[in-house]
Length: 259
Image (cartoon, rainbow, N blue to C red):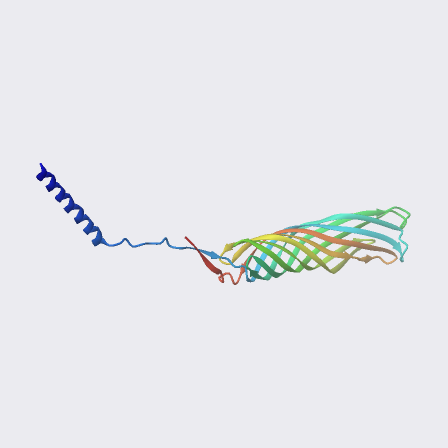
C-alpha cells in the first residue's frame, strides 16, 4: 500500500513539473492598451461668407401736418403702421476664437419687401374747401449693417453670440396730397441683436439670428400751396436663418486623446 501511494506522488509531481515548465516556455503575455479615441476640436477662426432669408416686423411711427405756405399747421395726424415683409441677402465676416471665446466682425446687405400705408382725412373747410384724403406710405427697399460679434463657444460646434453696430437703408416715402409724390431717403441708423450658430462639418454652419434695427426719421415734404410735412420714424424687428462657409475650417485645434 505504501509503495502504491509513493508511486502516485511521484507521478503527480512529474505532471506538475511538466506543466510549470510548459508555462515558463510560453513566456509573458504581451500587454495591449486600448487604442486612443481622437476627438477633433472645431475652430471658428477664419473668414466666411453666407446667405440668409427671414422676415421683418417693422414699424413706421408717423406725424403728418398740413399747412398753407408754412407754419402754423392747419391739420395734424399721428399714427403708427406695420411695415412687415420678407427679406433676404448675404453676409461676409471674420472670426477669431480664443479658447472658448469668439470675437469678430460681420457685414450684410438685405433686400426687403417691407412696406406700410396709412390714410387720414383733413375735414372739409379746414385745409381746402372739400374734405381732403391723404395717404402716407413707406417702403424699405434695402438695408445693410456693419456689426461686431462676440460670443461663447458652449460646445466645440455650437456658438452663442451677441452683435451690434451701424445700419443704413433706403426708405421710399409715398404720399398723395393733390397728386402722388415719391421721395427716396437714405438713412443711417444702428442695430443690435444676437443668435446661435452650429457647425455642420466641411466648413459649413447654420445660424438663426434676431436683429433690432432703427433707421431714424424720414421727413418728406410734398405740395406747393398746400404743403404736407411728414415725419416718420422707422424701426424693425428681424428674425432670419442662414448658413455660412468658413474658408479656414480645416485649421482645427489639437486632438484630445480619450482612453
